Length: 343
Image 1 (cartoon, helix red, strand yellow):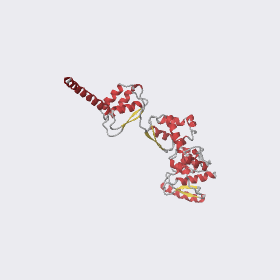
Image 2: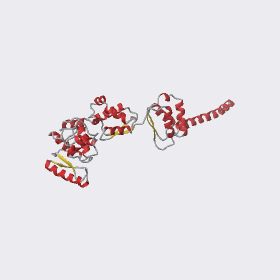
Image 3: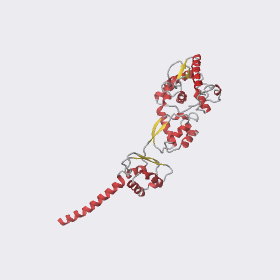
Image 4: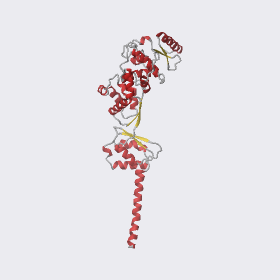
């Protein structure tokens, strides 16, 4: 019995050594740090990638044993038959097995996408295209597609109302249809009971609020002054007085660089010309900021009907109750423009 036990123990030693060696190799190639880096890296897999191109992309991100472990897992799996697009985080300390499971199963890390307050929708599409797998042309084509606009309750003139400037978490490989659906959900969330009630009390629809906010954002970048500007324009709307908003002339002419609006420009034939048309233009002249929208909904109550940029070029305005007072403000501003040679 003692001899059998001794022989058994002698056999267990090499078996144990083999198990430890195998376990060590498994840990080294599949579980230990596959990157050797201290910062998070990202692997982007797009719709044109296959198993070979993914390997080429991941090669510079992994160290030697991590790459061998990843290659072994790919070779003994069906990954090549179904490559999943996405943005995959490779965290410091991740082993090849963890990384491979994420890539194979499509376990992505969300990305922050900022919807900016911009003058044109093509700029918005460009900002989105730089952050997501869908390119700017695809986004712009979807925005311009009439059927999609109707789906969300808009048309080509009001589609900017769909976008609420903010930063959102979404997956890098989101489709353009799901992206627009997400924007619609965020828009509905933004237009909560409080904001909707305030718009209704003003006698305005949400898209009309957005349109007025777009004008206010073009008039001033000073958020503190925006409720004052909103109150002035709302006073004009209530008495059916033309808004006479210079930014709408720039939009009608598509000349956003204009620094001075001369009288000869005020006759441009356009539904956006608020000098010859009363009421609001048919849609926003930019994607307005949240501050601009809330400034309309929380407009300052006053009796001003006129405003003119201050002659100190501070970006704020002088307000007036009468046209005579407004002319005095306008004369000071015109003099300041002339002194600076601004045409």
